[in-house]
Length: 148
Image 1 (cartoon, rainbow, N blue to C red):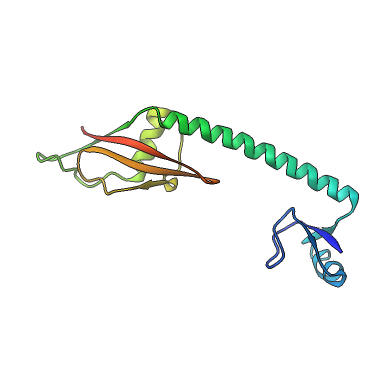
Image 2 (tube, rainbow, N blue to C red):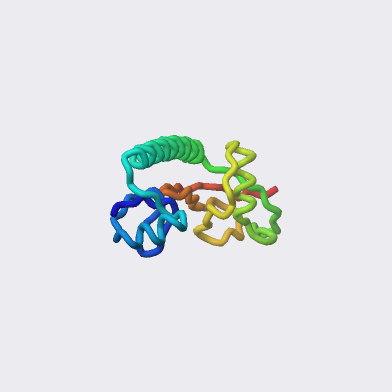
């Protein structure tokens, strides 16, 4: 028996996936618990439409991510920090400060959890951070730490 999974099922497959199962397992467990529906021609058409819509959304999202990456790579972002006489920063630069600087200088709101610092930022200078957008897309962001 072939069924279309509505939800992820351990050791079987993910949502919107067509799988072959034994008749009893499909009729007595998956379908009554609303984990799957029978793979009828109408349900297969609905699945195809869902997958088509999902692909279009992913393509649109990838285009937006590419646009954001291009905007972020235009040049370094400046971060102001209070420093002592030797050029050391009081405290350190955090991902929250980088996120705010991106919002102010480039106009994009990037979650601070997606930003990963390559080094600790405790002195003035130029540094790099990695921004992970998910879906295998990431970029390096160059930022300058300058004295306020």
